Length: 361
Ligand SMILES: *[C@@H]1O[C@H](CO)[C@@H](O)[C@H](O)[C@H]1NC(C)=O
Ligand SMILES: *[C@@H]1O[C@H](CO)[C@@H](O)[C@H](O)[C@H]1NC(C)=O
Ligand SMILES: *[C@@H]1O[C@H](CO)[C@@H](O)[C@H](O)[C@H]1NC(C)=O
Image (tube, rainbow, N blue to C red; front, side, top):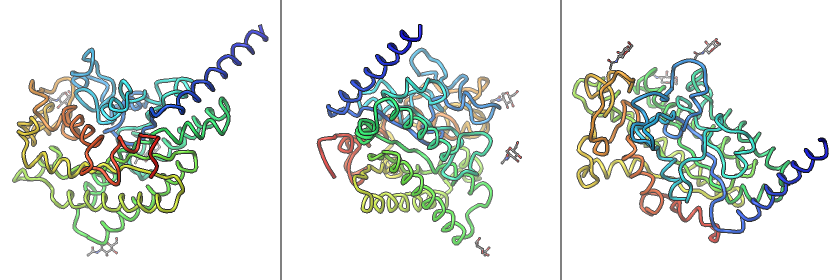
């Protein structure tokens, strides 16, 4: 019995090592590791206690294969799924909490959690903080190294992509609590976010990450839940400015890390710019409604979240927003597909270029 078990383990270790070698020998991205908030979550929050920050019920997932809710805050796929599809994955790697450590070895894992932000205080008690997500990743790398050895693991990780979509909830939370009246206070917030994010990226670099994809913040001030609260129904332009300030600071962080850390490379996705272009000519991109949520109730369909008793639109591909906070899969598809090859909407390289291991930057 003992001997058989030993043999089995040996066989498993051998195949993992062979797989890693094969994976790094090609130009395909071997694994994807995802960090962030509800724009990236594919079901981690399903495993958390309580009812907040969840999407594992109808009408979420109505356009997902099988029409099933998965925990994605979307009518179907999210932006991570579409980027993963471009990288020859079927969709995002599975939610970290939904699979075994062994299953994560080969193609990565998604650690993202709806409600979380860069700061620990953001989404506390209802989500998994970014710092905790990084600790969870650390645990995986330890397992990986014990299975295939440090050298093979490092090579594997250096070709993998580390994708981030975060910061939105930190700004939304700040805006909700303080409003945007005090420029000094806003500068402090952005400084704090940039500083913390820099430390988090550096920690991942120390744990073997080399290729970083970062989704910039969207036009946060235009989410239906905020427009609903403004009598004229316009966007909260002060919050849009804060998003832009955050994006600038994030770009500077990435640039600085790339110029000090050997082998650090990145693609920053200018989500804000992509949305601005779409907004200036929505019909060209197939949208007829940029203002209201498809699923919800009341003014702009933003007075309730997308619960099973909410109503929803039938022409979901023509809506920019799925619920009062999140984009439809049509929007996510457009953003990720644009980021994959769009030189104008990524800096300094596209996601496709970053993924290509034959190139060096
Ligand atoms: C989080 O939970 C702890 C322990 O239950 C509680 O003391 C704390 O007030 C909660 N924090 C927030 C922000 O809800
Ligand atoms: C703005 O915020 C800073 C930092 O929190 C504070 O020191 C200052 O008193 C505030 N100014 C006003 C006018 O409220
Ligand atoms: C759905 O039901 C919940 C609980 O009864 C209620 O709070 C909410 O307002 C309802 N939403 C809609 C859109 O009717």
